Length: 98
Image 1 (cartoon, helix red, strand yellow):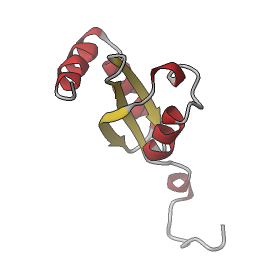
Image 2 (image 1 turned 60 degrees about the vertical axis):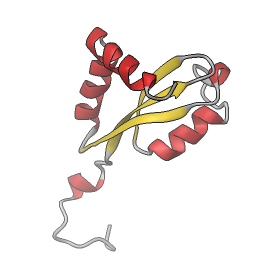
Image 3 (image 1 turned 120 degrees about the vertical axis):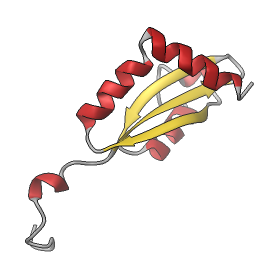
């Protein structure tokens, strides 16, 4: 930790910016909601078949991504998107990509 500025709060160093993302498969009309510290890396994992739950529905496109300061807040938003109201809003977003 010596390389870091001594004025930096060490607790903040471990907090990565988290994002909630929504993927859409045109081919199968499927949606997927996830959360990651690196949306681009996670998106590549989904499209390369490394994620069991999304492997069969490739290819995916990213239709939404929102960054958050910490994992707890991101998880709350992810839960919203997986709720009834959230799923309805996702359907509206997906229509724009059909």
